Length: 366
DNA sequence: AATACGTGGCG
DNA sequence: TCGCCAAGTAT
Image (cartoon, rainbow, N blue to C red; front, side, top):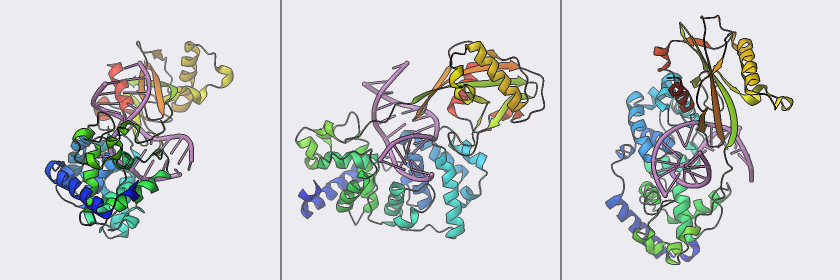
């Protein structure tokens, strides 16, 4: 454990790590061109649960569209969501706009500079607060993300379950002991670079890691035991019907509720089987389910249509906690007065933020 | 504490 | 096809 490291060893570790970072760290990343808190913040939010390679083009486009925090605070939400479309975890960007408004309104546009205050902003948790505080403001606080969990677990053979919330404290304290007070931001980023290269989750190469002689699990051949992480439950299967109703003025189109999955994104009407099938109906045939959906469409949207199943396999999409299986039902109708939703021209639909599942549905229809 | 929350890459 | 992973936070 960390208690075994004396001050000289800690100092040697910092030196070794930062020397490597200065030589081989990823200086080319677009959010490392400066230490502007706005740039650091946007990149850190995008990088949550998302790989560097995916984030790069999104970061460039986001900065082009919203160059300053004031632009972000004032942006129309639809434009914001469209810029984020495809990145996932969409509450990140909705929360980001709230935080931007907080900084502009409560702090007169000047970022608070300490971890504690940063963490009060919407969408900024302990990791992101530490990242911004250390990188932009040189506060010596460790940024404990998945990389830091993995690197520290292997270095010190820490067997606490990193899936458990209470474990964060252990790693934060280790990080506090290790972090270089002279270069806290570089230290944190070096740990992350290390954790995504020589000390990655799979296909790691500790043999050539710059800190291999500090790596207790490598030295005794037990690397594959760390980190300890209980596995997540499998995605729960859910059956849906997507309703593709086309008229001369476009498709039946609807914005999802602001909260929850895919909040404020646009889709065709979607019915989960569980929305209207009770236990006693569990033996319904497919024809009966289509008929029930058709009846609900008339009630909910005011659209009377003779729905037909689209040929081929249902469309599937796996979320972190759900596995959707979507059967597409379609019809062509004359434009009807809608109770809910709207008719939307095909040319206009592309400007609406849409989730990946909707894109898959479009592909099946064409 | 446990669960909700997206998408893409890879073996 | 499937399971797991990738710079987490909110509730």
